[in-house]
Amino acid sequence: MKNALVIVTLSAFLSVSAVAAPDHDTSPNPAKSDGAQAAGKDDADNKEEAGLPSLELTDELMYKILRGEFALQRGDWQLGYVTMMTTAQQTRDPRLAHRAAEIALSVKRPNEALSAVRLWRELAPNSDEANQFYLGLSVLGNNLDEAKPILAARLKEVRPQARGLMILQVQRLLANSQDKEAAFALLEELVEPYPDLVESHLALAQSAYSNKEPVRARLEAEQALKIKPDLEIAALMVAQTMTNRDDALQYLSSYLDTHPKARDVRIAYAKLLIDDKQYDTAHKQLDTLLQEKPNDLTILYAMGILGAQMNDRAMAEKYLTAYLAQLEKTPDETRDPAQALLILAQIAEDRKAYPEALKWLSQVDPGPAYMEAQLRSAQIMAESGDMDGARNLLAHLSPEGQREQIQVIVVEAQLLRDAGRMQEALAVMAAGEKRFPQDTSLLYDYAMLAEKADRMDLMETLLRKVIQLAPQNQHAYNALGYSLADRNIRLKEAYSLIEKALELAPEDPFILDSMGWVQFRLGNLQQAEDYLRRAYAIRPDVEIGVHLGEVLWTRGDKDSAQQFWRDASQKDPLNDLLKSTLARLRVDL
Image (cartoon, rainbow, N blue to C red; front, side, top):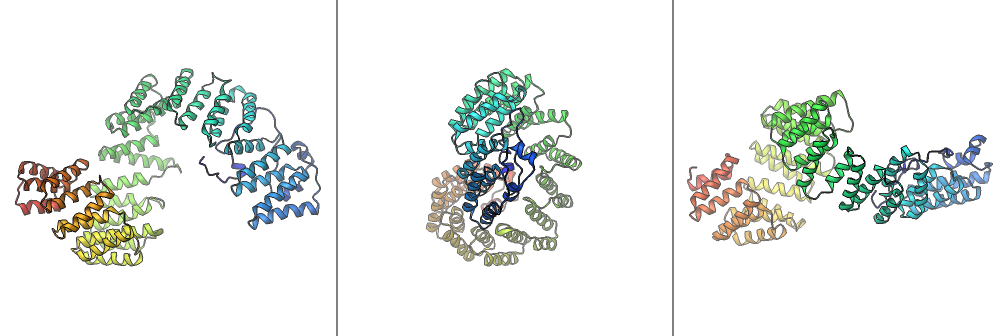
């Protein structure tokens, strides 16, 4: 739990950190009700079992309870809390102390809540619910000495078969303490009498890892494995403590050699292989898992994502389609099919199967990915020639918030630009600027569109407005500086703008490219080559390669220049900058 106390109801307070009750009979919890009902309950048997006082619901008592409740409704929690506490002390009724604790928790007052729970325990010493709240609040408030005897007693009294589970519950409870060192020390002390329980070492391993003590965590996890060699969570903990990825991979591989049925370990191993870009080996691991459980949703999805990462479209399509089919047969509300649908749509779009792509996108339900699916649908419709349909779709969207509204504006302008309808695209962006005149991302996109339309005056006005609104926006300085340099005008000013951008982002490859290009325009060929080589080393982008090729060509190194251009041509043979550069220099690759 984070430092801020989470507001919870009394019934849910320990939902993630409850400590199981001792294995003996305890009195039932007091009935959960408002103060008036609590004080007015008159079932004699229940009173006797719960140890509740025999009270007459007098007018005075009713007045006090209602006074506290009405005060809380007015927002005066202090009066409501004090009234319930005072009345609980006077009547010795634990239900009123219970209500006081509820009030304190509802307004994030842990200290007051703990005071109320102390009184609740005093009045109902056999209430397990009161003890659970007492433990939770003691740990949250770092009152670990108060929690210690209760936890120790519970571990001692619980049935031996349930003690391991309780140790893990204790560890989760103590994880909520802000004093991590003290909580770990207490956990060590509590589990010391039970060294032969695998859960003792597992709890210490988890706590040590959370406290950023990987060495201790590994030692405890290894001790757990000595007791129970097939304990997968302990093996995963050992791997997790290894800072060297190769060591972790080797350990998991060796573990699987001796424990081939360790499914969770194999899944973790496959994920680590994917992160390490060892796709073929990861594929084998996932395939092994899938042979064991052919309809496993997790593995089907992982295989589909792996196919996408390997750029194996057939593989991605096969497994993601199977994943969606299985999800339809066995619905799982915890799984969102949106990402699978988006990937399948992209695969269909890449092969220009536009109706199929639209079919996948139409299945994305309202949620985080819904707007993306709709915007992509519009782009596909426009790409397939249905511009009117695309614009109509965009017009009927209901974007939530400024960010989504701007997305719709920008996408519509892009569609019009790509269709060669530049004036309409500019009009859409101009209308967008009137709606959101202070949004720098919209202004920047508008400026880039103006540059494409050869509207230098408009572009410069917009970029200078971005710089005024966001002086640390390196992209605005870079865009304006590069545009001037590319047109071979106002080169000193272009240099100053790009220099400022480079100060803000020294390793940005595109800004380095701009600096190389302005140096070229200024005649500083060696500096130009140095900057462009740095940029290309960071990111071998087509246009950076084209610029570097021209610098080398100008310096007389024509073989190297042509090699860069050939590389660029392989990556993007239709690139406009590449085609115009080769045409201007009359170079035939």
